[in-house]
Length: 185
Image (cartoon, rainbow, N blue to C red; front, top):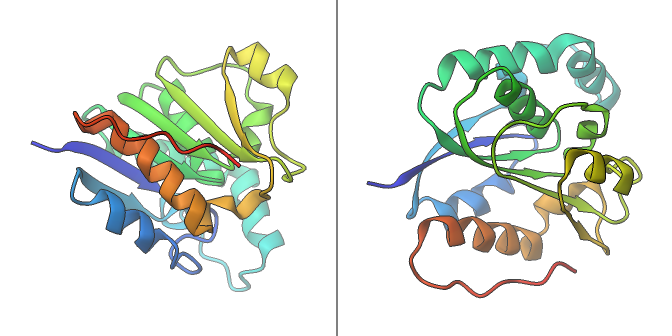
């Protein structure tokens, strides 16, 4: 039986997420995948979908609402792959008791405000050119090693080279084959 992988979108949800199909293409034969649109989890329905409006809706309670909804929907321990605000949603839900086997959080810059770490294996990947990425002080405080893709910014998760790297990392969790590591650029 395949391991369960729950994927949580970035703040745009399915509206600007064509890149998500690449992840599904690589991972669906190895994982039982469940996908959540972060806007739907947070009950965000805006008349004007600007970056600023969506960001504000998440910061002003949407992340907490989404974490509660994820907590209610997920009863079995699963692996999580989350992008941007999706990482904050999974992190907060894990702190409230979400059963987690592992978390792979990509460009989850709001984590820099977190004070407690969930009791689960966590991989954090951020772009070196993302000015809001958590810093060394935060990673030391959380006792985490953060992977940094030096040549990339916040949206690194939509780049095909990074998609392949992330998927190979995740496949190492479920295959018996020694998948070669892909160096972070």
